[in-house]
Amino acid sequence: MSSFASLIEKLSTAVWGWPMIILLLGTHIYMTFRLRFPQLKVGKAIKISVTKDKGAQGDVSQFGALATALAATIGTGNIVGVATAVALGGPGAVLWCWITGVFGMATKYSEGLLAVKYRVKTKDGRMLGGPMFALERGLNAKWLAILFAVFTAIAAFGIGNTVQANSISLLLNETYGLSQYVVGAILTLMVLLVIVFGVKGISRVCSALVPFMAAFYVLGCLVILGLNWQYLGESIRIICRSAFTARAAGGGFIGTTVLMACRFGIARGLFSNESGLGSAPIVAAAAQTRNPVRQALVSSTGTFWDTVVVCALTGLVLVSSIVAHPDIDCSQGAALTKAAFDKLPYVGPIILSVGIVTFAFSTILGWSYYGERAVEYLAGHNGKAGRIMTRIYRLLFVAAVFLGSILSLSVVWNLADIANALMAIPNLVAILLLSGVIVRETRKYLWEGSLEDDSDEEPPTL
Image 1 (cartoon, one colour):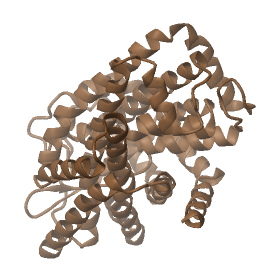
Image 2 (spheres, rainbow, N blue to C red):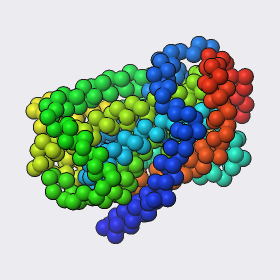
Image 3 (cartoon, rainbow, N blue to C red):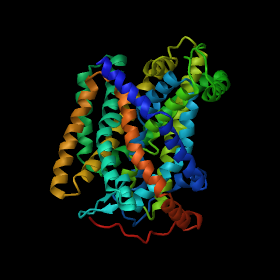
Image 4 (spheres, rainbow, N blue to C red):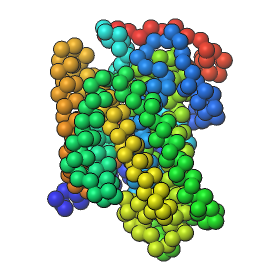
């Protein structure tokens, strides 16, 4: 088992070397400049996200699609993932994670636009879309579309299932002494009850859960930062300095290099906000929206809330806690997170518990939808075969929730990083090769002031 874990770690290091970092961050930066900094439209995007596009085609509201995407992205990556980045890459990883989020908004915008631009309608009126359809219809690259769907179906068991279930069961076991088997059984039943209702059921639950869980966690982080206020200036300096210079061990931090900070910051940033991963566009395609650009703007706010706000707050909480209490063990992500929140007596552990449980549970719901749509695509949209395959996949997905709750998953984070990279590559290829289409649609609706206009394109029916 140790040999297998070592192999997985080496593979993770290989796929997240400089080529992947350059591809991912390079796409973020390239699309930012080519689209004239769509990040500056975040205020307008937030307004659109809470406004219904009456009469528009789609299965769920724009806010419902955003809430489902946020449910899948705001997970353990925002808490344990950021802590793991700090533990392995040092405090500089926080800045790289944040930079990935800021520039990643342009990539998330691009994904959302392509999802609506190339979506299709099933015979029963459902909207389907995502990178597989952009690759097939936009680039005529069916083989890449199939690869993306395969990687998505597999990745859903890691990033969107076992990692999250294991985080919930371990936390409740270590904090409250609850049996992992009992927690696993209850969690499995809750997931089953929600996903049987499909995207509309998932959307309704996520629309109610996401605002509560995000507000509760952000408030808790602000309280801890208030307690550490005298260390914030030094924490920010350490984060910025460590992102670009090697840092020796000492002062509560491990020795790190710029490459380590960059690698783990960007990897955990992608794990958290999924910009460039290609997952969020799958649900964005189901949104009721007048035109592709409106949903693209809404999609970009997902990265803003997830990384620019939530991950940044988590990073500041962790680093300021280490500066304030140098005796904190920062060699392991989970231990670092627990120690930082334990410094807030009584309330801190509750904030951490509620945050991880709600974040992880919502992530499982969101990824169940992504995996099912990938399987449906692989079934060739054959009605009977598609229904059988998605039902089998759903049962396997639910079973994995229980297994993830009770098994030791020491190599899961590295496996999740590998799966993320394999998903991201074909999706980034689609974004870069279809960037001309993205610019053309943006010019038509955003730059020329036609954002309120309805699209003149009708999604083809399968």
